[in-house]
Amino acid sequence: MAPVQAIRTAATALLTLVLASGAVRAAETVESLRYGVSLYHLYQGDYFQSLTELMVGQAQEELGPHTENAELLRGGISLSYGMDREAERVFTALLSEPREGVNRQRAWFYLAKVAWQRSEIERAAIALDRAGLALVDIDRRDELAQEAAYLRAAIALSQGDLAAARSSLAALPEKSPWRFYSSYNLGAAHAAEGDWVAAAGHFHQLGKAEATPELRTLRDRAFTASGYALMAAGEFDAAREDFRQVRLLSPVADRALLGHGWAAFENGDAMAALAPWRELGTRPPLSQSVRESLLAVPYAYEQLSRPGLALASYQQARQVYQAELDSVQAAIEQFASGELSELLQLEVENSDDWLFGEDILPISDQAPYLRHLIASHAFQGAMRELRDLQRINRNLVIATDKLAVLAQADIEQQANWERVIEGGARQEYEERLSQLAVESEDLESRLAAAEREGDGRALADQAGRQLWRRLERAESLAGQIDAPQAQRELLRLYRGLMTWDDSEQFPDRRWRAERELAELQAALTEAEQGLARLDIAIANRRSSNFAPRLVALDTRVSEQQMVVGQALLRSESGLRQVAMAELAQQARALKRSLGQSQLAIARLYDRGSTGVGR
Image (cartoon, rainbow, N blue to C red; front, side, top):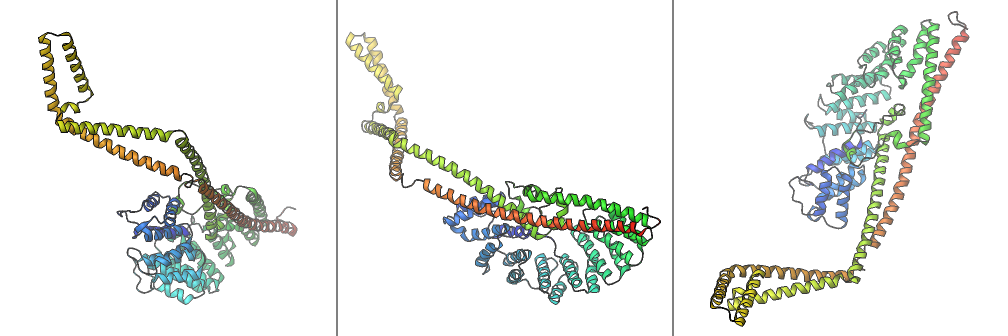
C-alpha cells in the first residue's frame, strides 16, 4: 500500500523547490514592478493573485529580465493547483537543459509523483526516468533517491513486474521508511496472487520499523494483513499471534479483532473467539468489522450450544442493523437534495492555506459512513476540485464587482472631462498660467534693474516698499507746508537709514529673488507642460475611452462564470453520485446483515429448541 499523500504534498514540495532555486531569491534585485508584485503576493500566501500577476506580466511583456524565472515559478504554482500537465509543459521547456540554481532531478521527480497519484502510470515512469535517479548506492541521507526507489517499485508492481519491484526494494537502506512501504506493497502483491506465505514474510518485515506514528500504523496494517494471509494458508495459531501485535487503539484494530476471532474459531476454539468479538461489539457500529462481529457472536453461541444467548444476540444485532440502516437511508436522502458543501464541509476561505493544509476530513453525521471513500485519493481530489471551483467562482464574482466599480469610475471620469472641456476649467488653468508668467517677468525685470543700478531698494519686500512710500509722501508734504528744518533733518536721517539698510540687505535679497525666480520659472514650465498634456488628452479622449474594454472584460468574465458554473454542477453531481453509491452499498450490506439476523432468529424459533421460548 502506498502511503496516503495527496497531490498537494508534491506540489508543496515543488513550490518550495522553486522558491529556493534561482527563480526567487530573498536578496534578488527586482527590476520589474509586475514581477515584484507577484513575489509579494507569493510570500503573503496569495498564490492565485501571484499567478494572476505573472500571467498578466507575461501577456503584456512586463517581466523584463525575470521572464524565465517567472515561467519556472508559474510552473510550480500551476502544479500546486493540480495543473500538472501545464506544469509539465513548462518544465519540459525550461528544464530540458540544466539551469543554474534549479534541481532538475527534484522537479521531474515531483512531476512523476503527481502523475502516479493520478494513476497515470506511463507518465509517472517517463518523468521518473527524466529525473535520472539511479538505484545504485542510495545514501541513507538521500531522502529523494529513497522515495524515488520506492516509487519505481510501486510502478513496477502496478505493471506486474515483481522482480523489478524487489530490485528497487533491495537498493533501499535497511532502516529506510520507504523500504517498509515497499515491503507492504510486495506483500499485498503476493497475497493477490495467492502466495500467502511469501505475503506474510514481506508483511513481517514491518516488525523492524522504527516507532514513528505513521510507521506504527503501517505496522498494524501489515500484521493485520499478515494475519489474514496466514489464515488463508491454514496457519491459524500464527495468524492469531500476528493479530495480537496490532494495537487496540490502532485505526485497523477492528479488522484485527475480527480476524483474531475468526482465527480462533476456525481453529476449533469458539470460546476464545468470543473475547475479541465481544470487544468489537462494544464499539460504534459504523465499522464493517463491528457489524460483522454482531452476527459472529451469536453464531459462536450456537456452536457452543447456547441457543438462548444466541437468540438474544441475534435480536440485539437486528436492532443495531435497523438503526444503522435508518441512519444510512437518512444520509442518502440528505445527499440527494442537501447542500453538498455543507455536507462535506467545503468552506471557501479567503486565503490559499489549502495548499499546505491537510486532507479534507469532514466532521458530520454522514462522514463516518463515507470514511473509506473520503480516505481515497480519487475522492479527496474530487473534493479539492469542487472547492477550487468554488474559489474560482468567488474570484469571478469579485472580478465582476471590480469591473462594475471601474465602469462607474470611467463614467465619472468622462463627466470630469466634460466639465474640463465645457465648464471653462481649461480657461481657468490658462489664466493661472498667464498670471504666473506675469509674476515671473516682473520679478525678472526688477532683479535685472537692481543688478544693473545696484539699487537695493528695488528688491525690498512689501513692508520695505510700504515704508519708502510713506517716507516719500512725508517728504512731499514737508515741502508743501514749508516744515521746520528739524523735521526736514529728521526725514533726511530716515532716508539715509533706509538706504543703508537696503544696501546691507541687497546680497540676501538678491539671493532670495533669484531663488524665487527659479521656482516661478520651474512652476511656469511645469504648468505649460501640464496644459500641453491636457490638450493632448482632450484631443485623444474619445479614442482612449475604457468603456469598450470594460464591456469586453465583463462579457469574458460572464462567459467564464457560465463555464465554471457548469463545471461546478458536474463536480457536485459526480461527488453526490459517488457518495450516494457508497451509502447505497452500505445500505445493501446492512440489509443483508439485517436479513441474516432475522433468518437466524426464525431458524432458532423454528428449531423448537427446549432452551428457546416459542
